[in-house]
Picture 1 (tube, rainbow, N blue to C red):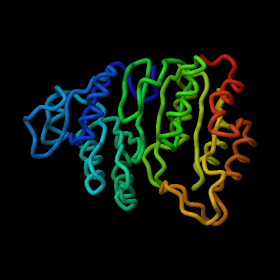
Picture 2: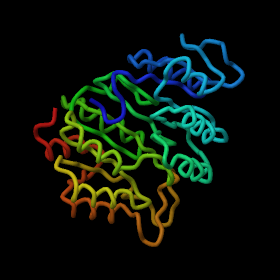
Picture 3: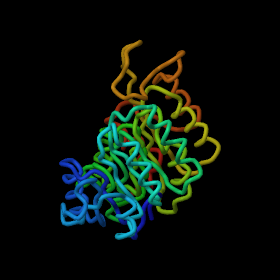
Picture 4: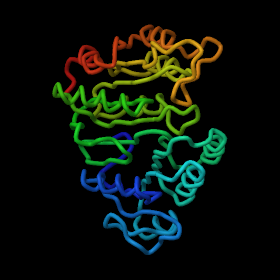
Length: 292
């Protein structure tokens, strides 16, 4: 079982350029059911062995796609997300970096009350190693089917945590990169709530970073609502004071959002925090000795 996908997940690729085609090929190679692509002006052609459509609405009508992955460049990414929402797609994963914050505010407002869920933007996407569903850019060979849920603001640290877990024989249920932008579609609490309800997830690794208050809010949620063990890591502890970091969400304001504050909130909630990124899997193993 997965928190976002199932055996009937049919993926549509929005933006069949070079990057979109590269990851379409990799997802198909992994075993994902990619049913089509969308690139305006190229409707009726074929790429990666699937048909390319003019619009998401046409693609959904012809293929029954119920999930999409967005590789559209930043100026058009928000419109691509909203096109997928209008087409009735349930899960939309936006990989695109540098989507303007104003555009994402518009997307968030437009998605209120719809049945669609957005993961991202600026994220590695969703991967379920048991179901062989890859919606995004995660390097699938490092994944192993198992029972640990992974949710992260950082793409690179998602892969690091997964690689460490797999190396010590611990598999993953669902891995979700939520992205590091200040305005995104799915947050830590959304994922933690679903992991808590998922019978196939035994424990969770949560990877945060400096900026914002998402980790502090997640700590409160875990303390009040979760029975499953959660381990964490916070990136950015050595960030120089007053420096703007790479992620748009990594902005410390009014003394809030520092690594020390986040760590303190997590530990207060009973969540063990890894001392370094190299200790993420070991910290999870100590928190949940039965993880497999």
